[in-house]
Image 1 (cartoon, rainbow, N blue to C red):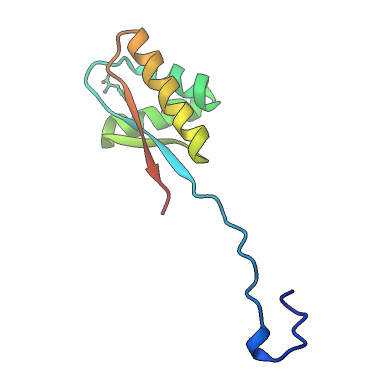
Image 2 (cartoon, rainbow, N blue to C red; image 1 turned 60 degrees about the vertical axis):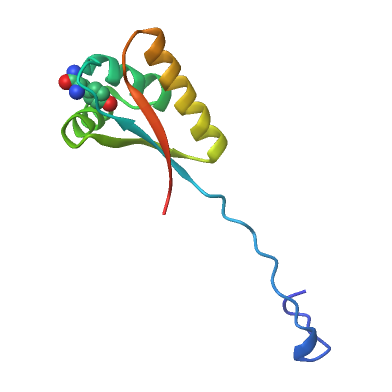
Length: 103
Ligand code: TYC
């Protein structure tokens, strides 16, 4: 194993790489029609934000056009996007979320 090289440099084995899983941002996109209260509800319901956190993120998205709702592994992030987009559509709001790979 990494520190048990008894056969000279040619036999040094590489240390197995433990993959750090890629993380993905769930981005909320601004639009002109979704009520602010609905966006706050989404952030509380699907991203476990407090009223204060949710309001801050919502206002940030409102002003800047987009913002981060949370950061997750790929399968969790994909699930959040599906849940948000479906919940918005069900309530006839144009709110959309997307995924972005973390740098
Ligand atoms: N811009 C919306 C409004 O003025 C509020 C809003 C905020 C909508 C964030 C979407 O992701 C969003 N009612």
